[in-house]
Each structure stands twice: as structure tokens, then as C-alpha cells.
Length: 396
Image (tube, rainbow, N blue to C red; front, side):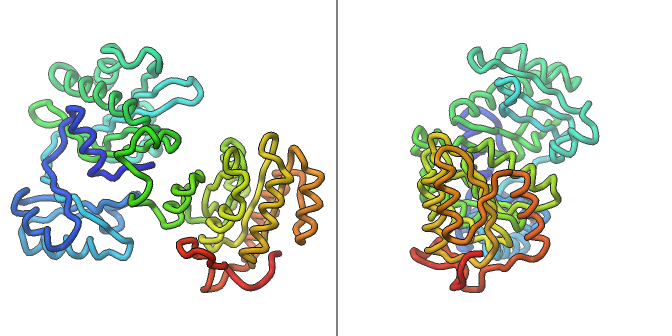
């Protein structure tokens, strides 16, 4: 679950991290009062979860009331669907830094990252100039200590009050990260001010969906999501990530799903969505396929390896899903594990060829996508409406 910038900054402020003065506005009629209270110049930021807001025209600096009202109304009416905007004071900073807390899966520790290049995508910086990134591992049982926080500051060459400000903010960000069961807590940019204080220019908080029950303050219902499909998947409890490719992944097992994603990309294909229906969701093939078809993919690629989640049970679910949704795009299936002999019979019975090799399945899916597949028609899957069917033709 990802929080909006406004929600993230509210969490930061509650933890003692300094943020710019701001007002959340959920309708055009409230814009003028917000601009009057914040003053000019100020910045208007769409509260959406998609990246690249600036490039999409969803962030705007305004300098007077006429310009502000016009821009505020434009952003709120944007076709992307903007439920609210954050009206915030402009911050005059001396420097922009980057600061984040996440996990390092290889060491099974917390990971503190800081960079002198704020505002950039950290992934790009790690490639082009990794020497500008300082990273420190933190034992999760022991937690953050002064040596960790100070190590970040000194690693950037900061000293005096600037070093103290960064160390203090890193410590508080760690607290937010742990208290919210977050997978990522990021400030980019982190403004270093002339008086050597720091201000969080942005807020990115990604919470672990499995810990949602511990945070009723952020209910799944009524929250913004990257897509309607992502919202419905969250309500269903099915792990889902939205992308913009043309091969829809429907896999059982998080590790397997990630591996299949990498194999697709390595083979030159592109992924429409990540959907993992293993574990407690392995009986939800009908709902899972509905969510996949909502992307109008060129291909649905199904890869599972069942042990406790039996292959034959998943195959029956897939057969039921094909019967119910009647997808017109090709479906490539590789189902292995407990009960795979019966699974093979079930899949052949509905006209699907059960493959035994994951890499072969990926190669076929990528080839089918390049060939164009057959997209569902305009009456395609609409998971927001109960009982909607993707198409009338039979499954391939």
C-alpha cells in the first residue's frame, strides 16, 4: 500500500521531520482559501500515486492568484483522475539531497541510503555515479544507532549543524519506516537549507500489504490506487502491480512471479501486470484472470509450481475462469507440482497446451505478443462491474 505525498508528510511531521507548510484541497471551490493561506509563490501537486507527475503536468509552481486558480482547476480536472492537490509553500534550498530507508534482501537488514544528488532517480544515479551514494546496513533487531545516522552525514562530507540535521532526520525516518511496517520510506528531494536545517520536499511511503491489519488508519477501501484493477486486487487480497506492457502475468508464488517477470524482460517482452495468486489465493483463479484481462493484454502467461497450493486445484480454477470470461487473447500455461498429471488433463480438456518448462512458456508468450495476439474487444473485462465478460469468443 502506497501513501500519498500528503499522507506521507503528515506521518513525517508527526515524527518531528520538518515539512513545508501545506494544505490539502479536494475541490476547486477550496483553492482560493488555500492559496490565500499559503501565499505566493507556491506549488500545486496532484495527489496521485503514479510517478513522473512533473512530466505529466501534475505539478505546477504558481506566482499569483489568477495563475494559481487556473492551474489548480486544470490539475484537478486532469484526465488521469486527481482526487486532491497539495498546495504547498515554495522552499528556497541551498542543496537537494536524497534520503531513504528500505530493506536489503541479501543481508536481511535495513538499508539507509543518502545521496548528494536529490531529485534524481536513485536507480539511475546508482548506475552512472554510484560513488555519490552512501549506504549503511542496520540490524533490524538492534535498530538505528547514532553511528549509523552520523555515518550517513559524514559520508556526504557534511559537518556541524548540517550533519546533525541529516542524522536527526535519518533517525526519525527510520522510526516512521518501522512503525508503519513500511517497505520503503523515501525523501526525494530532502532540502538542505541555508541555516543547515533540512526539510522534506517530498514523501514516498510504501507499506507492506501483509501488515495492513495493523494500520486501520489506512483502510484498503476508499484509497487512491494506480488503477481501478489495482484497487480491486487490493480489496481481494491478491498481490498486484500495474505496468504498461502487453503480457499479463498470472503466477503462483512471489519468487516465481518475479522470476517470470525477469525472464519476460530478458526475452525482449513487456509485462502488463504482476499478479501473484499463490498461497492463500490459489483458489482465486477466476478473479485473478478477470483482473489480468482488465488490462486487455496480448497474452496471459500463467506459471505456477504447486506444493501445498495444488496444481490440479489451480488448473480447475483456470478452466472455470476460461469458461466464465472467454478470453480471446492467447493463454500460455505452465503448471507444475502436486497433482500436475490431473492438471494436464484438465487444461487439455479446455484446449490449452500444458507446458512443462517455464522458459519455453515465456518464449511462447513473448512470440505471441510480438505476433499481435488478439485483444479483447471494447466490451472487454471490466472488473468494476460484477459479471462483466471480456469477450464472446472461446479461449485459445
